[in-house]
Image 1 (tube, rainbow, N blue to C red):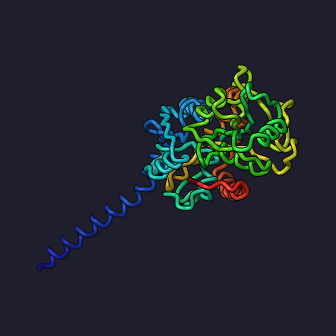
Image 2 (spheres, rainbow, N blue to C red):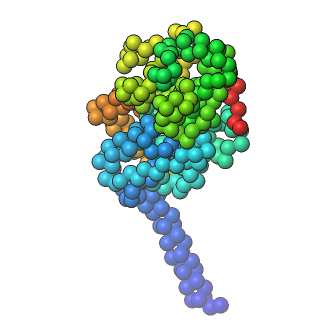
Image 3 (cartoon, helix red, strand yellow):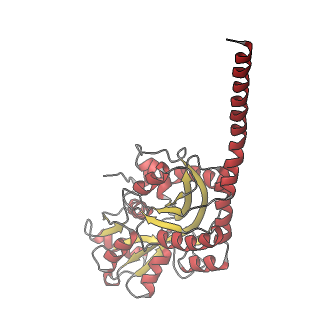
Length: 334
């Protein structure tokens, strides 16, 4: 090889290396630019419950506010089933490009104990964005059952062992665990009957097909006001400011009974922190708006925005809390 040829080859390598270095330096800038312009396409919001229930209502109300803030539609995709594992798994498998998020419930924190072999790791495979709302539960019965309090329901169940049923929205749903925990504390022989969602279970209670259920206070009290159901108690240890006349399950002689559910927003692992932080900020702004506060209050829900780190810590702690409830209730997947 001649000297000139060697020099030419060396220069060619220099040009190539310089081009590669420039491209590598440009990558963070390009990624940053893309994140600054996020979202450039509609956002896919996977909701792990069927349409019409409290989770769906919260997701759609939030989606409308976020669409205004982000300038892109939020497409609601209801993916119920498998104790919310179906929808959650879809979120975990989605590309971490900031265009797919999931709205989950505290079933997200229940499943690791109830289902030891989940197709995902609840802590490692997702990025928590924020908690959305807290949702107390209410204990409901049909008017035809003839009971108006927890004590009357317990007395009836004990007088008719094995003859009363309670409705729920799936084996890992808080509806199921609320019923099983109550059953265990009160020493009742009652049968759990599952439905596709809380709405279906509530319809069954209204029709007298099952005799009681625990569900979100907003949807439940709407049925009470319509005269279709009777409210017996709320599930938090203290009475609610929104329903001060309603006693608690704890007041009926079960002081350890204290249950509040929640809804939250998660993303696939690897979603850029800049996108997570932007969505967190916009979601918190939406949740704190008068419009959503009033809307959620009418559902019996309380806006409960958190930072991503706070929500991550909350989820880890809630896995322990619900693990204890699962063990106390004796609940097992069938």
